[in-house]
Length: 240
Image (cartoon, rainbow, N blue to C red; front, top):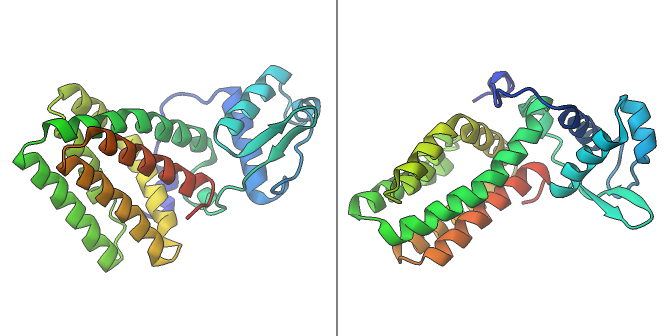
């Protein structure tokens, strides 16, 4: 998907709250360098005046930024920029989508971690074949330089189907638009990095499959949770 198509995609139907909007504006200022890495953010009263919002709204936005690892609070000193998110993020997504992409990754960690654990306990031969087929397609995408979002979607859906729990499948399908949006962003950013970055992502997929195949639910859950948390960090913290 092109950057234009990504920006045109409708990630969330809900109207952003005022704290969402403040979160997004501070996020953008950090990305753009107005608030540099390791610098102290203006006090809540200054931010409230700048953005025309109440201090509780500012406080809620700052709390979200802390939860996402972008800022850190120091007792008696204020809030400081901990990490500068990948500047390319703003090329691929509308600013209003950033908070919801974060929340979607957060939700997926618990949901898909549980699915991987159940899949490890319940898979049959057809399930494992479908998971491995999606994994092989992802390998081919790396080899040919393709984005691979559809293959990535099939991989995660095949794991949900291997739970043999229709609620997992239904929730996974209902979130597909949101999940695909995050995958598009993550994989577009990875293509801007050395090829080794996509291989790191693929190694995480392999670890998930290996744990599922040996019927180790604890390892499958841990591998999936680690993969999704790493994906979030790669997008928003610019890590490898």
